[in-house]
Each structure stands twice: as structure tokens, then as C-alpha cells.
Length: 204
Image 1 (cartoon, helix red, strand yellow):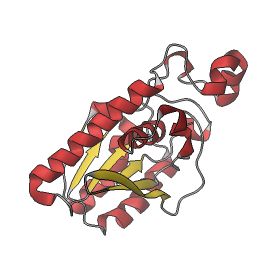
Image 2 (tube, rainbow, N blue to C red):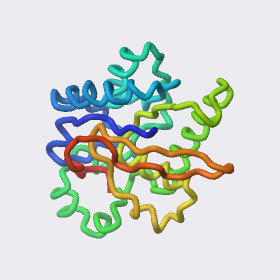
Image 3 (cartoon, rainbow, N blue to C red):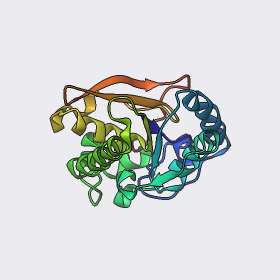
């Protein structure tokens, strides 16, 4: 299960967050508490999170309810946005019109690099779950970021880079579910949960 962090002030202001360590705002904290109660009922076996504060803080209520340790993995961080971090969507469109079209920060992390990085973290999580004796039935909750999760799951599903935009963005504190069958990954749910529509910032 791939779970996006709760809302931050920068999300609300439509600012590109990237790897800037922005905390959850009060709405995001409430979202995390509410979603954690739903996810805890599923009986997860493992929680793995980006080490950025907004993701780790989202994972914390679920850890408290389940008694599980949160394993931090820096490869689950959001895409590094370079000079775009902290800018609003309108500012990026005005200052970088050409790059805005394809949503590629001029000095940021390339899309393919993000996809490979996050997919590697997801593979490691799946392997650790299998090693723990849960193969085929275990549930790992991976807490990360909108663009990072979308790109990582697209890579895991074998989608070509030019189709990464087929999967729409995740709402704050919503999740997607991946499963394996006959050695292949499948998307079982996308943008699940009962939270509002996505707030677009660095997730395109």
C-alpha cells in the first residue's frame, strides 16, 4: 500500500515542495490520524516511510495504533525540485514557461531517476516483507510523496516513461494498492480513501 502524506501549508498554497522539509499543517495532522484508523484495521505487517518530516509524521499515528516500528528510507523522498522548491505553480509558469509544460525543473531530479530510485525502495520493501514470512499475504504500508509514489509505481508496473502521466495524482493522505500475481505487479486501487480531491503542487 502506497500512502501519500497529509496536507502541508505549501500544499495549500500550491508550492513546489520537493525535498524541502515542510511539516504537516493542522489539517494534515487530522488527515493522518483519520486515515491511520482505517489502515490499522487492515492489520499491516510493516511501515516504511520517507525520512522527510511530512511523511514520517503521517506514518506516526499508524505506528502508534499498530505497535509497528517506522522504517525510514531516504530513497522514498520526493523529487528534488532545485530552483522550483518554494515557488507556486503560477510563479513556475511565469518564470519557466518551457519547462513548466513538461514539469521538469531545470536543475531538479529527472523523472526517470526519481522513478528508478523509488521503485528500488519499493522492491526492497517487498523483499523484506517476503523475508519476514509474509509473501503473498503480507501488507506493507509505504508512506511517501505524490510524485515519488506515482513515478515509482509506474516504473514497478512496467509503464514506459511517456505514459507516467496516465496515473493521476494522489490526494493528500490517500493511497494506492499494489499486489503481485504470477510474479507481476498489478495496480489494485488508486487514490483510495475518503479525503478531498488532490491539491496539485509538485505532483504532475
